[in-house]
Image (cartoon, rainbow, N blue to C red; front, side):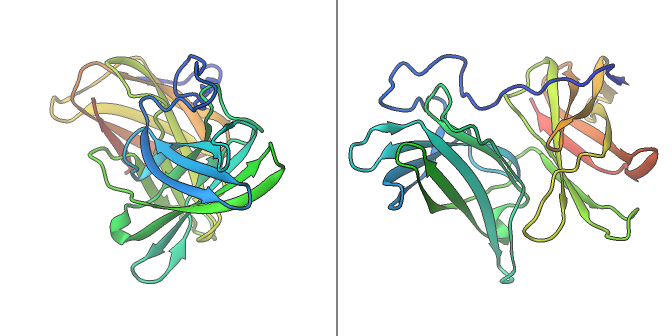
Length: 273
């Protein structure tokens, strides 16, 4: 059973990796994170370390950068990071992917800069490069580095897409089941982030959708009560509640509308607790 909320749910802040301040101001707190790569920006005299919570996968990936002065090794906490993923496909065609860059002028309490990157396919189709721009607030300089990254298909279905045939542009819409933390048995935040592929390089947020869902456990033949359909908050993000009543593989059947017009009712996410 799914209900509609009376008011939007406020999205939680996903910039911190924990709720405590970093006790060591000379080094970023990367506990629980996986090192993805390292690069040095000559323009900003900064060593950049790229971290994620797990192996990169199609869908929303929370990415973190620890920045250090390349000469003194001091932790850099003033500035901004922006990500630009690029895929060079085996066919030779190139395209980017959606991002949500959080520009706040400083690292979080763990000494990390962060952003969200939504890879739309695994590396089997080509090669992903993550272009990363760092604005060093200490020296007022800017530079770009590139990380070669591998995106692997995990066991969960976290990214889906369809072509919107209700408009003359016939653009594709991509939706990601975006986890701020690992779900548990019981009520969990359901965050879905939606983008329109305007062209191969532009992915504006899709802010005009109505998203409904129904959770089921196909292997057991049942669903769950007390779910809340996600509603729009900002930047293509829709927040609701999903109730996982037991461990196992769950399927979230989606219905996508614009106003009263049905866009798609054949998509689903799946997630195994």
